[in-house]
Length: 327
Image 1 (cartoon, rainbow, N blue to C red):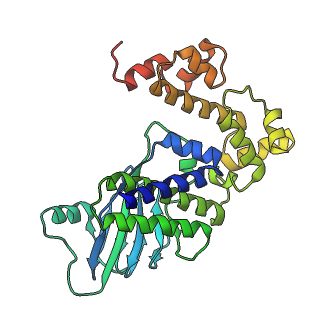
Image 2 (cartoon, rainbow, N blue to C red):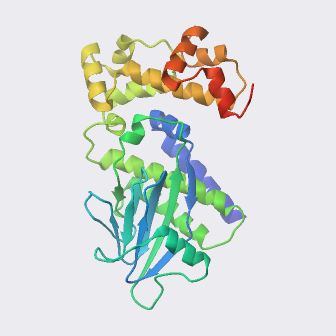
Image 3 (cartoon, rainbow, N blue to C red):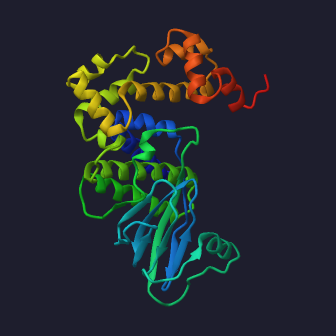
């Protein structure tokens, strides 16, 4: 019990530390409703290779021991060193290999053999030890954040503040996987969420980002306006007010915002308001008028028209269908 409590305290502290400095991104990640699954430790003996088909999940891998490569079609081969993380955010098909020339078997075949008690790639040759897992994002969320992620993110084991916390989270994850303590699945899921947020933070700070939602966080002016929109979506924002928050002229602000995010500030704000309204419709029993006001619309009729134009149905219909109601 004391050990479990220490892990919970770490998770609480780490989440507080992360979210205190990433307001708009925290808001987006919360809307994505991350659901994490951490696999049991994976042990291979050379030669080995696993092929992961394209799917809706976001995979992550951490190399604990041995040699590992990650191959994604059309991308440069990634060689992992012990302590490295690789995150495949958008479910791209990829292979994890002990050597670039190794053949690979489908992940489904590997799992089936494991479940039958006949695991593949077991022997006396060089051993590789991995921790892996996947995330599922809410299918109802369509946000430029997802489009701004590359096919793969590699974070090496070199030490700095972010990697220190990554190492701490990974160490706790490793300990939990090595034991059968009560509540371990919940703790592993939360630790995995912290790991992915840290990987994204490292990518923002260290990645070569030309444009996109994550690149906007490198621009203190644009990020200030994004944080303001997310903090108070109910406010009747104008371009002049948003430009003032960014400390830019209106024309320069609009140009730079669209260059980075691919849409105008007011278009982004509208799309985010619709996303928040979808969450409010499913999370509570407030009436449509109250929800409209919470996302910045004083007219219920105007909100209904806008929601239908964006979602394809009225807010009331969306709520009924999503909650499985017939009336």
